[in-house]
Length: 600
Image (tube, rainbow, N blue to C red):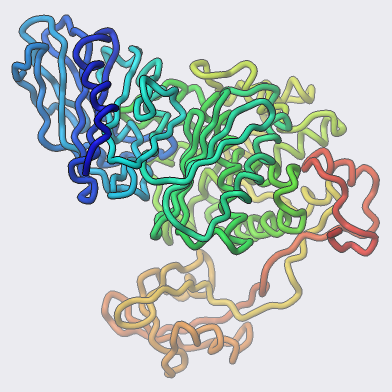
């Protein structure tokens, strides 16, 4: 493909030595984008030592997992200022040591393979490139704080966007240091682009990929979200913000960045209301992260160490509290209806009450274990995660503060104080958060913290909702229950999960077993629950299954559980105080009519 020659000529001038105090990057995306390949060159200022350490991070911000990022690097070379090759050796994962015999400017170059769209690290194709610097651009600790220039060589017709400032042309960017670069991904390619303003700030929406989305509707709702920031904070950490959206062939997820976000959804999962709510709720989540995580975060990770994992007991606050507030902004901004908000809250409560892991792991413990966490049967039965558990303890803390201050203060005030006085690089500790809550209420939070954060907790959701004049309806209908969750194997019905202390658990049935028959008759995935409906709670059935390829039959005593979805309703005759509590909590007027129905 023909390159943007003007942009590349400017890059060549820059790299000729006009800005030797800067770290200069260039990436050529024109050679084999259809094969996900690019060439990268990095020019470091003069190094006055016997070696120069060059690194590529082993993880990316927003994803607390060690990733095989350096596996996408080939053809690494290092040269001095005269173009002579320098000796080097690979010393660690994500680390190269370049040997120097005298002070010199050092340039390194390498081939980059970028086909990790779903991990939101790097992806290059014939129509775009998404570049998260943590997976694309190497750095040297010696020059981590130096100014950065980035130049792209792109195919004709591509447009480039980032939260960084533009450089000398529309395919170049500048940053004050590597930390800003690594937290400012670049989206370049064939895309849709919109600009808008909200509350005196500039915003951009960049969409790559075709799909059933409505760009105008997205912009309308992003404006509403972006205007809700003062509900939580009394200032902004940015003047300009970029929403990046990928409509994909299956990849999904999202990641927050310094003044931008990347959101991915399958291309035909935007139009239906439930799908759109998932998308716009994610956008709200990532927007909140611009404060909670990017502007202030736990002390242990206030300054990122890109070459190792660093644990903190406060990821529940960084992620779970963000989840807690995301739909509140949609609700107060008029993007989400009260009925939709409470349906989501009901679903979250039902998931919590049916998760055995909450009896074993605390919010602090899951935060500390996030780097090594896995999903599946064991996680369900013996773990919680920073998102869902963080959401629930955030709600408990919010209600506690409102209750103790007679609705004068809330958990929003904690977030506001963290933004005012614990910005990066300072960060905050558990003691800081407890101290803020104590200042707001005049009460010690040591006991509350021990019970709700440092220990596994089962919340009383009925009592929490009653504060706001609400009640939880768990449903009157029941169904026969075994504790088995089915998946499909190659040779029968494979069990993906067995609930701890359920009838199946007690009968010795486990995840990975393959179900064959009940009472001697074959069962199918679609027919499993219907077959169970032939029995009643208390009945004992014979279950035939393969366990480690051996055919066994066990006796299972059936139980029962609530059938259907939880729902949240108004209590009868809510008081003025309960209505005021709900308004302070969610920022809306009482949403029910005199008959307890949602007001349309």
